[in-house]
Length: 177
Image (cartoon, rainbow, N blue to C red):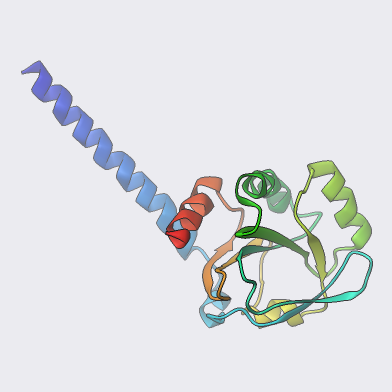
């Protein structure tokens, strides 16, 4: 009788945990802005500025999976999310995955460099060259906003708000499979 109760308790806890995981995943997928509905399915070619001020074109087909992170150096949620992105770049960064940070309008190269040193950011950072970058991706209304793009240039994820590390790792693993 006791073993039957233990088995029943195990299955109840198991179902609750699976429900929680599905809930967290669904919450992070559906909490995007209304602008996300109009977002393109394919990554357009983007023009950004390097921290030294010169224009750089990010290709429409990146040849590897990338996570484009729109952030601001004075955004508390962005700063809270950054250690997870640094960890993600350490774990997966290389030939098949990279993170690209884009400081939104109002971000200065000086402020971005200071935050890079302070937070140990280990991925390339650029500045948005006007509203064009944001509008090309369907509008970035809030920071942080991250867009996951596969190696063929297809947008496979859009995350408004700070990314939870387990959620993005889960999405990366499912996208690579």
